[in-house]
Image: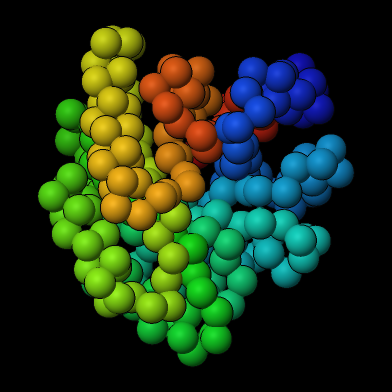
Length: 217
Ligand SMILES: *Cc1c(COP(=O)(O)O)cnc(C)c1O
């Protein structure tokens, strides 16, 4: 299958209200440009170094999403241009993003990454931590940040019931926080589980290998 048919195949499976973030990690700028030329604007990268190599050689109107763990000392490198940091997994990181946003005289959009997978995963807030941070945000603690929503990853298992349960936890939290202040983005679903994620309420999917092909690394 060509890049174009893969891309169009994914798009055809997304309801109108669901946004596609094309995960381009490990793929070269030329391939990203091919998908850009098909009309795609939102791309996701998980490593700052890689993002900093690609961003300057690609069109300015690309909406870059950072989807991988971000070290606080690297926030300054992306703060000037990043559209969305989907992987806020600690309050310390949020503080640093707020500081760098102020320096860059812009608001930075973020999602709180919540640990929903039952399997051992390294990164993500607990539900309680996410609620606590969101309340501080509502109380004006992070004036240079806009918390747009939540991001989560389900376990890499075949058990559909388990995956639904995990996505369900995030959807419930999304609804709960949205009753305090309306949230826009519930980012769940990757190549292997995005149709299920959409059934569970996702309105933003992060799809890589189903478009670009399997990654070697
Ligand atoms: C790599 C990655 C994706 C995309 O995974 P695919 O299985 O290639 O679609 C989505 N989200 C995050 C956080 C990732 O690191």
